[in-house]
Length: 273
Image (tube, rainbow, N blue to C red; front, side, top):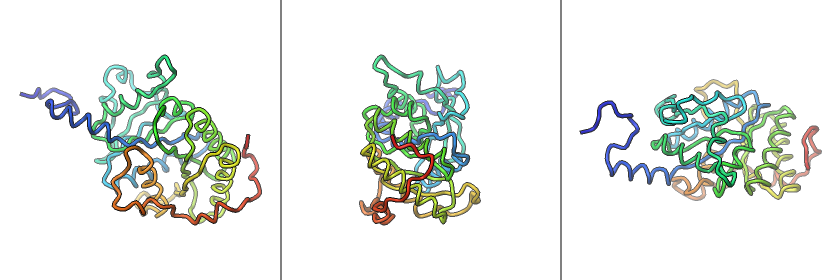
């Protein structure tokens, strides 16, 4: 008989343990490079969660960003007990500095994702929000597409490029997406995306695959932009073993490729080396 005082996420039987094992193998990891210069970064993470929820997926947000809360002392002995439920399809784990506790002798913190998967076996997506330096240690040997965050402030754009540079050189991750905290109608957003794409291609050999905007001032009930829905599907397709999309064409580029051919004047404040 099952102990009524047992933790609700503990395996119920041997078959349940196997189901959890297979669930961990299907876990999709979406890394988001934290950017302390983006004021609306919380709204951007919520937008990604909303897009994943529309696809029927449960998202665990692991916030290890510079401004995140430190994990509970209980995290050292029972990580599952530290996971908060925010909604039926979204859970949350405060994790500032937590990935570094899992570094092995080779400097890899890849075991952190295994621990997160064990702590939340019901999650379909782990949205890992962390600095580029920590992501490079956690994402060892993983085929994922990091998301860069930015807004129209040049410090945020410079920081986004620095994150791309760090991950491309330290982790070998060469394909990125960009999510910006601003109105989708703002022409400057397209210029910034073009500039990041050109600099990444020209100086790093990396690719900015897609980008989308989300206005942090819009109501929570506002419908998601098609670009954000598309970006979310692209991220899932890029995360092994991929998303359950009906057609491969659903993941084709949404924006015209001609936009990347232009070479606009370099935006001030953006480091390129």
